[in-house]
Image (tube, rainbow, N blue to C red):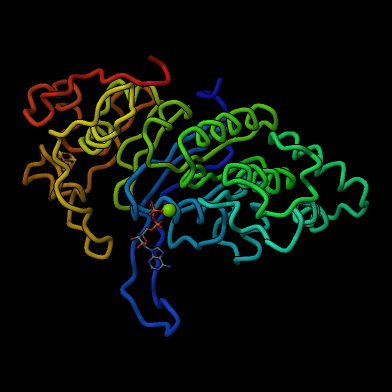
Length: 350
Ligand SMILES: Nc1ncnc2c1ncn2[C@@H]1O[C@H](COP(=O)(O)OP(=O)(O)OP(=O)(O)O)[C@@H](O)[C@H]1O
Ligand code: SF4
Ligand SMILES: [Mg+2]
């Protein structure tokens, strides 16, 4: 069903240049190409996971889709209509059905306001004038996120970290969004609390017919939760596919290294053997050709000649690596991956 669903958000050749001036003194800094020629579709009702190391551009991509950050090139469509190239206020207004849930969403709640008042405030802004209706809708939403409706009278400091994430979700859902950009929504929570928040997200998707762009670096969570995955490296999508296809037959060396390093993925232990050499290069000084070359265990000098483009290696499965077709069929011949033989297996589907 998901595979044929129409895209609700469509991104084409999107590039985002950040920089100019930063900090209190507005010191000039070299511009950073945080997102480079990214194309992706978010299909109605799906969970698309966006995965990659810190600094690879996940948040920037999410903020640009939201209209909080201006694109330098490319196009974004929401529900079939172009929403890019607009002035900042118009850009955000055109995308009010897309909402952002950031890493520590609960921390942004006003400590001096009761939860009920904070939640009702969003309804005031949306033009709900009747106080009784606001109270009912707040109580209903608190119940939907698994909190006692009576907790509307309580203040943020009276809630645990997991409960605050629920409150933050309730606040956003009262705005009746269709798409949520969830930026590491469980970071900083204990494992058991993380699991309950993730289950809640699955329930809420069903109940409210939501679509998620789920930003995460935890591949075991991604394997369990998402329908499709996009792997990002230094501003570019380097592999994308249906979760099962991608986890069964990862085709990009970077994806394989991420999978090998994910301790909880399919119950495997973290592999010590796979070398991911060094840190990612700075986005201000990305190397020519394939940006992963410096760290790639199978790279060849020829990889520096051209930036690899995404090509299909299966239905629903595309990869940007010059050696992908060879490597995908014959990982075992690469000594560095000898400990791993495809299929590696996906926790969610296995
Ligand atoms: N306001 C800014 N001005 C200049 N560069 C920025 C700015 N914000 C972020 N960057 C740079 O843009 C790149 C992408 O950052 P971004 O926050 O999108 O990455 P991320 O994948 O979300 O990382 P993380 O996993 O740490 O949240 C990084 O190199 C970052 O240093
Ligand atoms: S193009 Fe070359 S350097 Fe880049 S990931 Fe593929 S094999 Fe490695
Ligand atoms: Mg981020």
